[in-house]
Image (cartoon, rainbow, N blue to C red; front, side, top):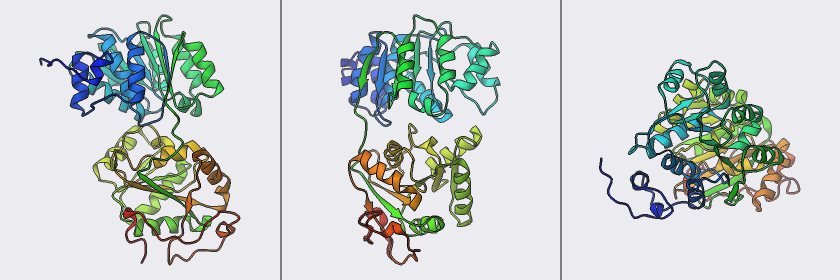
Length: 407
């Protein structure tokens, strides 16, 4: 296909016509801040530390210039490490879409599925590999592939790799790459352990920092719902019953908790998908695709679904468990109210959650409204004392998405 000459905001920062055309086909008119700052640096061959939140266009910020630098089909010259299978799949999909007017090829390597296709792809020869650390190390150790020709190494969502205990594996993989490579490092936060890894893995890096998202999007209406622990599930069911929702993600703290809530919701005749790290890859893909397609009205998940995943059209988020990390609150409720649409987020707060709830308010710099629903037979708790959780008096729902909250 002949690509017409392009004169766009993307060509002005250095992208060629084929890539700018593929971006335009996806409906993007201008680069996001992380893209505008990172793309010229990556094209210039600099090592980059990019600090940006989910939803800022980070994947395109490294995928587009990498595709341009690779040029045409050859050896495996780019490796992108991701902490989870879902993120690796999403990155592979992005590379496939952006490279549609080139002859560059991409594959994916992750655990939970057979080795056959992955070995075949690597032996046949690809230009870009998106991988999770564990499976990639398996394939390196059995001789299915090597990293001698890697020219560009991307370490993505590095703070999550730290949380999941992957940093030792990441170091082993970095050591197997050529020393004269270009290294790109993307993370939402930069704690000391990650800063040490960056100092070791990168050469004279340029730091691109897009401000940490401390406040929930203005399109999201969010509130705390105090309740005693024994009534959490009853309140969840009542919220779902009284809420006019299109699709809802329910976040739990543990994998066992996700399974338990999903079973109970199914017994209440809700269609439910489940996502957590103990589910097989097939089960996780089916849950995510089923939720996106509308087969499942509810997705019950751990924080594996809080960051990175591109899930459009989520009308509601419910934190069945208050996140222990205040920043995760912003990520979780940011699954709704995306792409200029509006959404609601409910968080069930028990007496054990008071400290974490206060941490969330300190992090976002605002008090979160407390709500109780009418005609629910609450068991009294100190949670309803203003000294414990201020302003806990019943509040009439205001959101257009909560029509029917009153009986």
